[in-house]
Image (cartoon, rainbow, N blue to C red; front, side):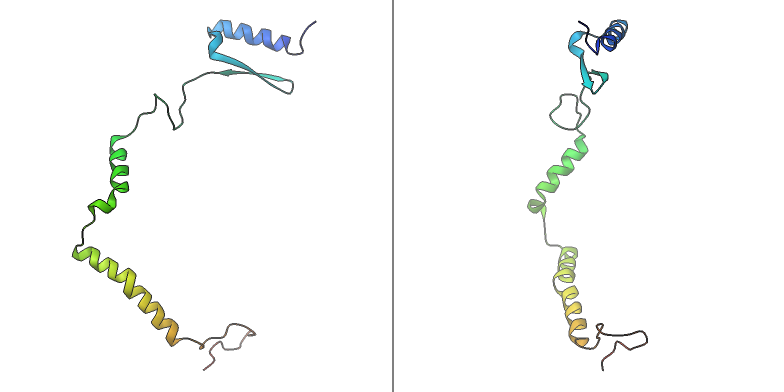
Length: 118
């Protein structure tokens, strides 16, 4: 009795012998009526892989980023940046919001109506 894949398998076996693949380095994959020869090759994606080479400069940067809090120092520049983001920006937004509170009404307006209430 012959298999429906027998012709394809014979062709793949001949191709494998011609290429010189060892039996452990290939696998047959059947999908519907098609047969594919999947060849084993070294993994090229990230993860635990002995072929993966890590960039030493990136590794140093990653370590620095993880331990950034250990190297932080207050300098005039960091004080100014912290003041701007923690006091100046929220203060300006609060001032603008307080001064324009209730001045504009965007709901229920038609074309040509003014949005200024007072």
